[in-house]
Length: 525
Image 1 (cartoon, rainbow, N blue to C red):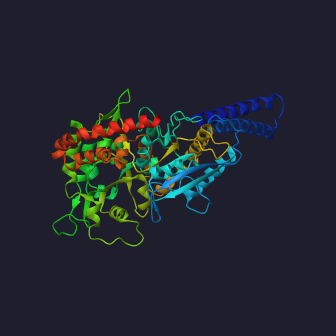
Image 2: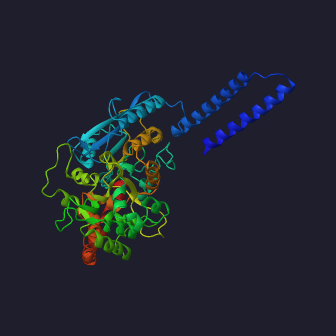
């Protein structure tokens, strides 16, 4: 908007100068047009330099352009959960040693070099593979060897380190502006515990968007099976706020075609949806269900068991239990995984890419597996009904997130919370400008006819990101805490027994979350 106003002002200025020049030429003789043009260029150059200076000062987190950290190391401890060559839920977003990788890795490399040059710092990472964050952190703390500034790992596993006292509250980190959209305010607010925020994310990593739960759809199947005619155009429904649970379930159930005529809809036929577990519990989250909430006094409450949740679960179960929905287990049963595929999950998703399903659920980053499709679309998960104000997009709890170690490292002279805030602020701002556009361009090639529509959907999805404390406890060190997400999922898996299951576990769940919160308070001292 500011750029538009500046351009308009410049155009007005040029027109005024042109008018004055014509008047003077009639009375005072010819004016040197080259001289006027040169003056205009100098004025615009001065404005751009002032703007660049203001941007630089802002992006340094208030530290100003003269900040210099003596080329000291700024280090991420990257606790990866890798399997073979696949870095699940992490990604190479922190540090890249050369430009020779993918276009996204090149953008990360250039981002880091720019921040290093501007702040006089060296960005590095320590990679720890195949172990749990709490075990790694315990080793570093016991050895009095905190040689890192930020921790990065699977969100759910990081969240469960909070009661151990390994992390500090990020909400008061100096030299940061959490109101900027390159910070995920959702993660800071939604995942707060006792009024403090210990795990968070921003645009340094693309996981907030990459592991947001979305729907992919095949527009050709929608046309061939009259889904658009009967239900409506999906993009238009989303934009009008009418993409609701009823319409989504009606679309899924409208596609089940026995192509080979063997009397049953199986993997070789056409169906409405491919979903990992064929349970649909993420739909409860998109419809506004929250597993754990805090009241004004930061007292936790388990809030997922309600009439609304039961209504959602019953409606979802009615459709998901039919042949129109295929789970990964059904798609891979007895199959040999083709060479070149990472696992059974990628193999299952290949059925969508080959045109067997109207919808597929999953993280946005799965677009990388769909590059050979002629056309596919993306949508947010549906709302409960049209009265729900906004779409809600849950993020996979395993998507890697950040945390600040409880102690500031002592092995680097310039290390401080002020420095941490400044570097994170600058990296996140730079990522928004340089890495995020590259990420979007790699998942959505511009060759597709609905490219602009996809970008519109991205805007809706990114502005509706949501996290849930209960989901983050799904990989807890405490089995009772894990049961919070387990009991919620069971409601969707077997709604008929939901009441008895919840009643049987209610006391155990309440005690577990109370203990978790008391442990957090105890760790704070």
